[in-house]
Length: 214
Image 1 (cartoon, rainbow, N blue to C red):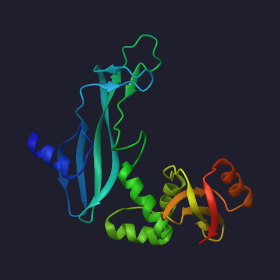
Image 2: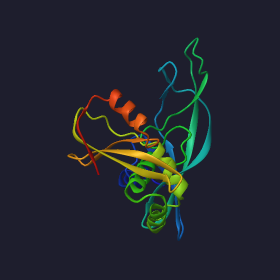
Image 3: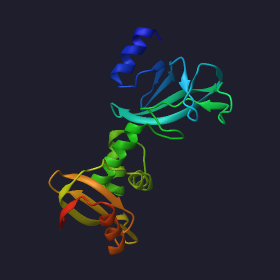
Image 4: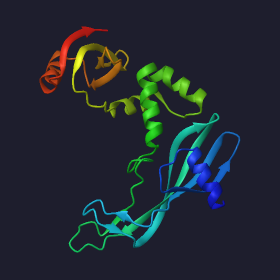
């Protein structure tokens, strides 16, 4: 693929800076995009010193948001660098693809965020059916796992806090959802619906003025 074409396609797919496309392999139901990081050096995660000495590379695949109803798979070429800092415990480290995928992640950060929104809005079973229609292969348990990783943005103050329970596993396990009713934003998800858990959350977050039920 020509550099100009790769740059244009990377821009259209909103890939982070430094991520380049090397080839695209479409089929009727799937789109495989081979990508790599083109940054010359990478910071060591331990000592934060840059290194441009490449030790080797390996390949990993992660799922991304669908394109025109087709499943998108990113085939990543990930490099390993040698840290030259004396005394650093990370003699060899793997480059981080910030903004694209977390370390050891099996899906891109944007696909993970999409599944969280889908799960919060629809639940496990309905969310799975809707995801399949959109070209995302998932399962009710995968949606629930994505919700367990939910981290809401910090809020300075909440005028009216909405409290309700919701089902991690219908009929067997329930949690508590906390919502800013004025801003219509989810504040947090609690692992159960016990009063003691909610009371502990209130003690740790002095941000609530009024509490209401949804």
